[in-house]
Image (cartoon, rainbow, N blue to C red; front, side, top):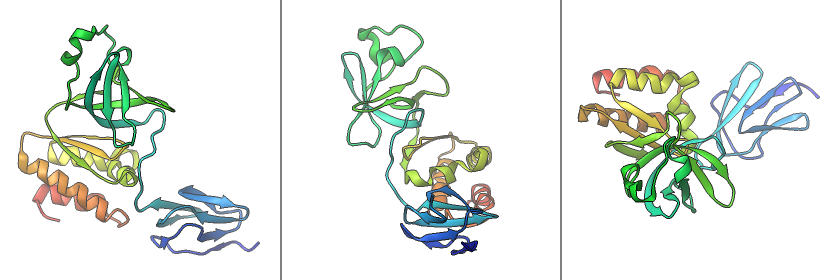
Length: 227
């Protein structure tokens, strides 16, 4: 088969669309190999770097996986732990034994987590039940801050390659920002104006996720307050 690229960089693609032909091209993201062709599995934006053809979904829900790092809200104290809402049809469980390296008595559960608290947790099990852990850093209870929701498919862009985008946001704004893979972002800062600018910057990342030079635009916004 002739080696041929069928799409352009940053082109919008649909499920099943042929992106490239030939074995020299490498699929990435939501692109898959189908025999000697590479096709898209989602509605998304394609990127081409050399012979790597990648597709990033434009939107989509969150599908929990073991070792994911997520943000959730405690909704209930149960007999052996806490129920946590993480944006899924079924709530997740945070067992007493997985909440801390210290022994927790049932009567002291609210000293650790209460209803309404937000937690940054790791997923330890996915099946009939989703189980969480906050035993080890950086997992913990999140203090007072602003919680915003974004599309889970945009979380990799908000974090950036090797954490470059989230580092820029934190360093430039002076805010503490925690990103959950389930699409929740927690923002804390002493300067409310900076907190709101971070929210605005994240909204811009969502809307302009496929544009080039986005890190520089975010840095300029946070420094000058303008897009």
